[in-house]
Image 1 (cartoon, rainbow, N blue to C red):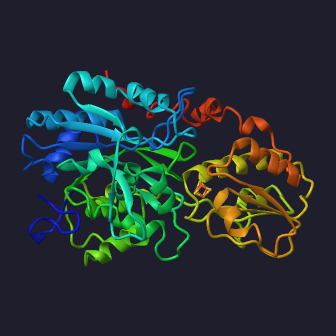
Image 2: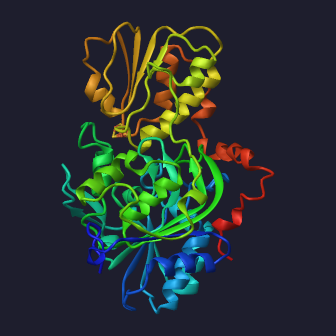
Image 3: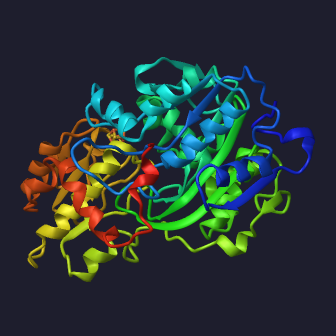
Amino acid sequence: MTSNLISDNMSKPIVSVVKYEKPLESVRKVVEQSKLFDDLPTDAKIFIKPNIVYWNRHSNFPKWGVLTTSRVIEDAVVLLNERGIKDITIGEGIVTEDPKDELTAADAFEKLGYDILKERYGVKVINTFRRPFDKLDMGLDFKVNFSSDAFAADYILDIPVLKTHAQAKASIAFKNLKGLISIASRKKFHSPDLVHDLNYNVAHLPNKLPPVLTIIDGIYTLERGPAIDGKAHRSNILVASRDVLSADLVGASLLGFVPSEIPHLALAAKERNRPGDLSDIELIGESIESLTSHHEWDFIYNDAGDLPLPFQKIGVEGLKYHKYDNSMCTYCSGLNGIILLAIKYSWKGKPYDKIEILTGKRMKPTEGNNKTILLGQCQCNLNKNDPCIKELIPIQGCPPARENVVNALKEAGIKVQNAFFKGLDSGVGFLMGKYKGKPEFEESFFQIK
Ligand code: SF4
């Protein structure tokens, strides 16, 4: 068995890089070259973690570079079956606005073809939010509620997408494991602490887990990820390794990063006394250079960091909307994206009345503003009594209710359209437009026939 902290026999970890060409054979090649499944016993319990970071039941949306393809999931299951391994579970915790929502995960599993995998190969498919969590000491400032099913497995087969992330820079195998923790733990991962922050917490994720085997699905890759508003590319890359850090260092390189610039990977390398580059990795297969392409990850703001550049370009005045930091977690991040879009479309050229909008768990009010909007309970708790604030407009709740967000913006004098906040899931279909007429973006990669 491998450990997630030390490579087998302290020999060089192997990472295989393959060009995706055809069903089954390409995944077979990357798995065989990396020896990924070589010593798995036939009675091994395998927990497969895809990345289903988003799903909605009401409208089609771009899955390319956002979700793990069903192609790679099925191929991995077939290869495990060929080795006589039958005890396979696929599990994911899809964040939904209503925590009681059972239908979204069921819909995702059905439409992604996982129900066919159940019938065809006897795999189990679980919504981790409906299953128990173990409280694990991962060496963090808090205990982590981690999926009991994944923790009880002999191996976790981590199958992330090769994509960028607006907060963590890259979201590959380390970051994909965060999808196995409870909502309460996810909120804690986005800590306000500047040292023990999101990067620190993510860097520790694999340490106490069963061995993590990794297949990175880069058939589609994503700029400005991790979500459906990013820009996908058909990249046809597969990466596999028995060493999760090595897989991610190679993945980050393929996205055009110097891997040591990804904070959680740099921290994880340091903890393992590893160089944090590719110098101690045995690379097999395609050359990194031949498949690397630069992927933008960041959303650009003005020099002061208090207004998105597109806002500055259209002349928005009287508004300070500071750049999000990594303490803002999923629900507020989702809302933040909608608010930015709604403000951009509501701008009519008349300067706002010196409004400041604060998000996350760290931002503090600045002087000289007439109105201060605090988004979410964390901001309200942190700043509601700050003497800097002239007129306070708090949006309480975790997550804050959408209608309260609309009302707060209107109260401040930002006349956003309710439509942006209502029925958002049914409205995301317009994002499909940018992939129209591009045959390389195939929906069939997310289906199982
Ligand atoms: S209020 Fe927002 S930032 Fe705070 S825990 Fe809730 S979702 Fe996260």
